[in-house]
Image 1 (cartoon, rainbow, N blue to C red):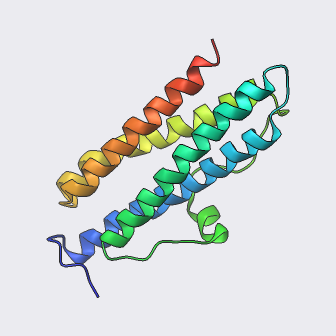
Image 2 (image 1 turned 45 degrees about the vertical axis):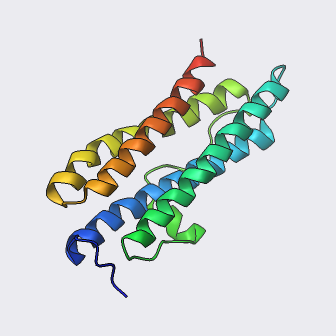
Length: 157
């Protein structure tokens, strides 16, 4: 059954397609953060192990919120690893040696990439696709990613 929420089906689908990519990006970032949690090594192991655990917990909540927003718009979410890998703008490959600094730099880059894409879509979704609700929603996501990026950046000083 189509969602009759004041957004045309064409615009609802266009918004959902933006959210499909975001969901894939969030899932890949979640997986990379969990990898950092599991595999970090070094003198700061426990502190970073705990830090990454907090971050992947926050990302888990964001993933659910994005998927639920897609469903609220009347569309089904991509929900397989294959679909996420085909949609994501991120790479799942890690290029560090399991050091906390290496993981942090890579995760920070991914957060910043997501922030830029969210920022690019805020006005597009509100103005062109006439969906103020999703525009507001992704503004909130952007702010959450900005805080997570700030926390990562703070570890690199």
